[in-house]
Image (cartoon, one colour):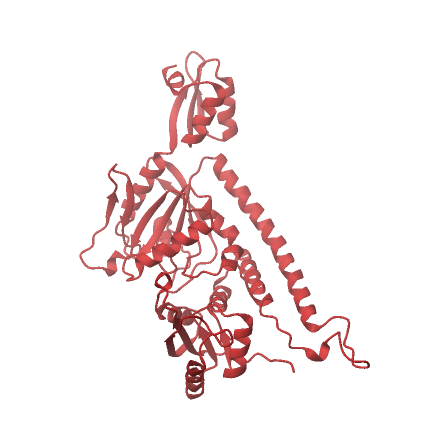
Length: 428
C-alpha cells in the first residue's frame, strides 16, 4: 500500500534527547530558535535521555506514547527532532504519530529554502534538498513493481526507480550550473589576486551579527535580522582602509553545531570566499552564554573547509548587551591584535576593528615606490604581469620609478626569480 506523507503545518512539537555525551551536550533552546525561524509555532518541547537511539523509532516506546499524547492534545501538525533521523525512523514515526516528522537536517533545509534570494543560493538549497530527499525515497509503490506473478506484471520501471532517476538527473543538472557559477567566482578571485586586493571574510555562528557589522562597516543594506540563517548568499563589497588601501569584505553564511555535511558540500562555492581569504573575522556574540561552544563549532567547520590555518581576528560583537564592557583591541605579547570588542548595532568600536585589520594586513602587503636599476627590465615586466603596479614615473636619468602594491610573499618570489634584492631597488 502506498504510504502518503502527512501534510505539514505550523503547530510543532519539538523533541530533544540527551545521550550523555560530554562533547555534544546541549539543550533544546537552539532547536526552538530554529523552529521559530522556519515559521513553526512550538507548542511543546519533549526532552529525555537515552544511551543510544532506538533503531526503529529513535526514542523508546514510553517517550513515543508521550509525544503521541501531546500531538493529539495540542492538535500538532509536525514533530521536529533535534537530531538526524534515518529514513526508516522518519517513516516509522510518521506512520505511528499520523503527522509530519522532520529531523534537524530537514528543518535547516526548510529555513535555507526560505532564506535563499539569489539564483546561486536557490540552486545550492535545491541541491542539498534533493540530496537529502534521495535518501528518503522508500518502497511505497508496490502496485507498480516490475516483478510479480503471471498476469500481474508492472511496467518496466518501478515508481521508486523512476523517482531516483529523475532526482539523479536533476542533481547533475544543478551541479553543472553551480560549476559554472564556481568558475565565475574563481575568475573574480583571480582578478582580485592579480590586482593585489586582499579579501577579508566574515565567519561565525549564525545570528552572531555578521551582516549587521558588514552593513555598518561598508554602508550597505544587506538583509540583517535577529534570526538564524538570515544570510545565505555571499555578498562582497570594496572597502577603503587607512594605510593599506582597498580590501574586499565578504559576508557569508553562518555556521551552526551539527551542520550537516551535505549542506557544507552544497555551499562549497560560497564557503570558498572564506577558505581563500587573506584574513578571517570570526564574529562572536559576546552576550551568548554558549559563546565558547559556538566558537568551537565554527572552528570545526573551518577545519572542514580547509580554512582553519588562515590568519583570524576574533571579533566579540554585541557588547551593547553587556554591562561594563567597552570597545577595545586585545593584543598578544608581540603587540599584534587578536581580538576586538565592539557593537555593530551602535557602531561603537568599528573604527578599532578597521585599525586592527589594517595592522594585520599591512604586515603582509608591500606598498612602496621602487627606483629600478637599468638592468631590471625582467623585474619590471613581472611586476606589471602581477598587476602590482599602481603607477609608473621616470626620474631625470630616465630610470623607472614604480609605485607598487602587492602581497609581500609575491614580492619576495619575484625578487628571487629576478636575482634582485630590496636594497638594490631602494638604493638605486
